[in-house]
Length: 101
Image 1: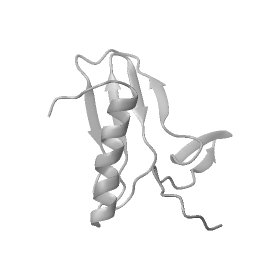
Image 2: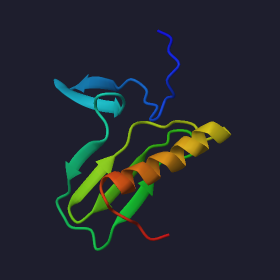
Image 3: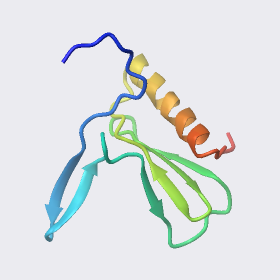
């Protein structure tokens, strides 16, 4: 498919595997992210967590909630670093949560 519209929020397809007859997400992607989870405890302040250089994703947590972004991937290119920063800004704006820097 081809189009001339800009891609605002790029997302890969999701990847999952069945483990002990339960579907387990290996990589969140289109249709499954952002994923909202409830924590069994409360965070003392809004928290931003990020993955490693090659297998990057973002988690934004506050109170007893956490939002996990789609898989971003390798941060070895300027474009992927830009998307990384965009996802952080988008999640904080969407959920109206600001983390300290």
